[in-house]
Image (cartoon, rainbow, N blue to C red):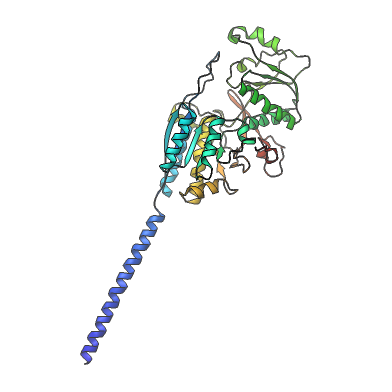
Length: 405
């Protein structure tokens, strides 16, 4: 009897051991499975879409931008993101599409979205972004404007689905106007071309002049068809004569058709700003502070050319999604979008300041460099420019200036 009881006890102990082993094995497998899921690498595909435009004929092609402007900035950002991503389990890839019509661009975006892509860098015009914004409503997508500086996209159209990493005309005008205030140059002769874009640039500067108390004494339209390479010294001095003296000349010439001929040829020997002379840019090859020299070097090594403003705008767009992924450790579109739009988002971008997106129009707030062709001159916001919350918001449309339709 005692032997049977002992055998029964041993059987129960053995059964308990086997059950314990099974439960332990199941727990280990579940834990490892959960850890594997948590540590699974996050993969992000970034799509760069460019709407091709008709070439604008000008007298000089010296200032023509490379055809791959923007795209190569995005590629460098992907490379940088992957350098960090390999240590935290994140990978980035870049796809590129060039399209001739806005309808084709929209179809391509929709196709890619259906295949799982939700990050789009777009180089196009205002009409394209209006159509994209209508399509993107209530969709978990990130759309970055990396090329179009038009002010209506930041003030009246209210494109809630679009983030702008390229500065607007108004931001650049405010940056130059602040410099004029700092230098006490208040009387301006404004020269603009006949194109609609030239008119938009001139209008942006008019708003900036009003904001900072500057006086545009006269506006002139350049409507000559003269080849200035042969007649600069005859045409410009006569054209820049005015009935009242001026301190500076602002030139609005989007395609740089005549702007570069204005400096040193004006009737009164005065500084030239705007589309020639002193320009306000998000990026230029002469910027070297705050680690920018290393970025310039990496870009030259990869591309065998200098980084321009369009390259930098695309670079910032990719770095924004990489920063959001790193901080949230998430690949879920909704979480990344929420973080990028939040006050917690900050982007280090070789500017000496943390950058962030404005909640009222999606514009990336940033300092702008004031440069001449071969040297850095200054940076705006200028010292002493004040704002209730962020002095970077003295560049471009502030919240109270919004005119959403």
